[in-house]
Length: 160
Figure 1 (spheres, rainbow, N blue to C red):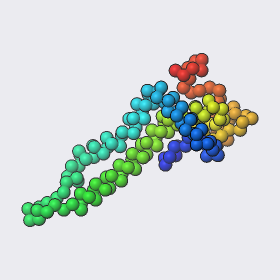
Figure 2: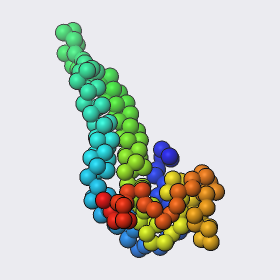
Figure 3: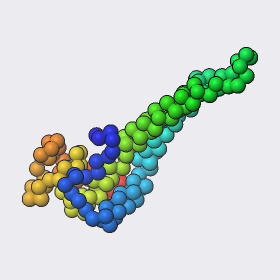
Figure 4: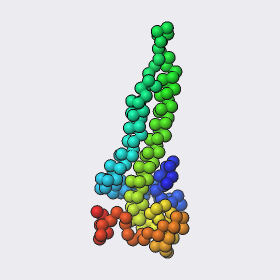
């Protein structure tokens, strides 16, 4: 799993912009039909916000300007520094949570839509498979799942 940005498909597969919009639109609609994925995506995405609120509640003195009786003008430098560091840490954690959420919940739907469109790729790593032997093991990760079966399909190949 790439922590900088999700890998939807093999970089050598270069669909046109309109085609990318189409399969991402279909993947979004597909994900919306799976409430478990939406709940998991939301929980993971909001985790850094919960951490931020918890941190500010546990350490409220870090987020106050300090003034003393001898110097009534508050010293804002520590408050600004703490706020800036907290904000940067929050942004990094939020990005990591978003990428993890996308990889766990959305990427499988994109890959399923691509497979439905006839693009031979590995479900695990998105490596393009040779068109003449799509059921062979992936040359990148060794995954051997048959492309004819969908991991989230019911007993007759219909989405559950």
